[in-house]
Length: 541
Image (cartoon, rainbow, N blue to C red; front, side, top):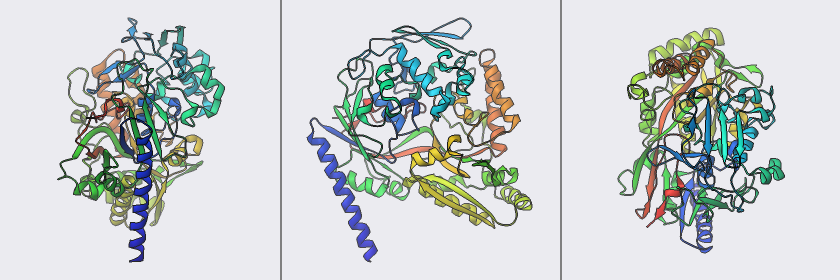
């Protein structure tokens, strides 16, 4: 009873503290929209972003050459128009519109070249340094330390003209340019600050629809302020948006019911109980939840290098029960890496997931057979660590996976390690030693092409996945990009199937977002790639 009273007191204290923060934001001028994230923002340095919420905040305070509109179409951002592409598909000429940084200085083509070069420097070890390697000329060589960043195939012909040279025709390149790691950085300002650029709201400049206040890496809240110098086509409809980090759905619900949140993301039982609420909305997204499988941890081979163990784990999850009874936020079971409704066959128009079908669905008998084979090599007792970020949604999924696995596989122990998102991501990188066994994580495609997800397992990946058969299919898809799109599509489907049947990774679900939304709030929408949410469209009537 004392514990229950203490829990209630702590919850009330948290709500009071958040309420005071919200009131403080409102009192500083203009109507405030109050929103939430379940995890922290980690940086305001676009090339160094770590996924959502970084990508959402970056999409609000920065703007790249292109962006996605509410229908997922690629439209100009800082670019004045769509690119002029050479006949061989290798050279892109992009003219910039008149755009300003938040200190009044112009955004130039040099700012893009500088940002991309910084992203590729091996010493920076940015998590998204791979996205242009093999696409922009010399990017792979620079990323491997074999060439100087100045040799990148991206040149500022003048202040408002960018020339980009590719290694091969890449039909999705313009879509890739919507992704926030390819946003610009102000050369002079960022150079002066060096490694401290983006560590707080005062240590960055902004060219997007908003600027940002009251944020550093220890912050549990931040404020977006409409940018008076923004002149593009994505102008903010709200004067101020206040974000709080709220990791528990019960707290989010209480704050929403008390009028302290205009939109509350819900998970699990709280989401299920809220379905009848007239303010309830379930959004489909292109984001997936999946399990990374690591073959080598801090230089040592893990038990997951065993083929039979990986396949047992892949086949041993009842994803329908997991989505219906545990996640319960509109998420749907995923039997592939590419979700439905994300990308279509460029020749026939058929949806990738529909054409590829289900791969490695739940099969209890087959899973048990693989488990018995695995024990022959590994012994009767196997312990695996499952790393997860410390927000409520992923904690509940991890507990459910632990229960499913340990109930099904006699002798298996799953140890859950819950960490702050930025800490978990750092441990998962090659520079962090790939210090995990399994990692439950989300993934949003960076651009509208299957390779955006499949490249996570390309050569040199942080999971030490190294099957030559997959690499052959993956590389062949690049070779076909400029010559035979129909054949390339078949190769991409084959590559996904090969990876999953090899136990290279385990897709869990296509993420839904269960949200209570104030009826006065409009403009809440979710994209299937690049920046998940376009914050500038949100307004309160």
